[in-house]
Length: 330
Image (tube, rainbow, N blue to C red; front, side, top):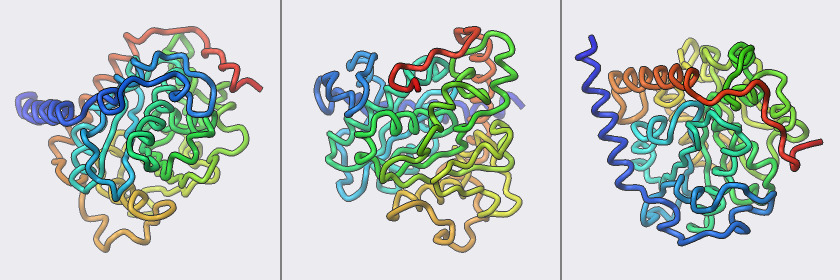
């Protein structure tokens, strides 16, 4: 059994390595940034610009001026390569998109307010590099960084066309409360039900600005519990079972499911949000997104589960949720 799984793991590592070769750090494309530019008409950023630039990879040069560039934001206990490098990155590039990605600090286990600065900066700089609005796609916790950035840095709202949220825990999950009965990672405190962070994120307009928000969720997502927390007020909320009745899409499965991918591309390629009615006949027949085998999806899921277990044990832990930044304090 183990021997059979080694090949997909090697294949995934090769794909991630190729992704690293064809992407370059943002600073190489734009030159040194300035704190004022990085702030994007919002609160000043605490993270050094050089650090923010180094966390973002983009194609060099951008090759598709007819389409908006795409920024991929990963979730908890992961990295850009681990979440996106083997699936969405090559699939979207082959579909004719310039794809950028950001790797959040501490495998996204730290203060979400800090990691959100990486998303703020990435959107701002990619838009400056291309002169076009940016489409952002998030998975899991990555959606919280996207929404936090768009809420508290309103200047970004005119720089983003689509925000596509996959497996979004934006109203909290009960698992966070369970893990944080003892000291846990800061991010887990923040996406626990009833956190101060969630109250600040969801107070007022949950989908600010002219951005088209598409929120995809699944009744078989084992992490977003209760599933009633998944919809986002003001977004086009689409359950995957409403598109394909009986379909099983797990939390990590959002990164390789073919119907999720088709819905994402529909949002990117049309004005406004995704509309399942535009998806092709037979949309429910495929299993995985283009170029991803069942073996690769299985291997990637195993890697993600192992990383989550390791991070729950090894990540820096605190007794209490990080304090809200002054800009988000009522």
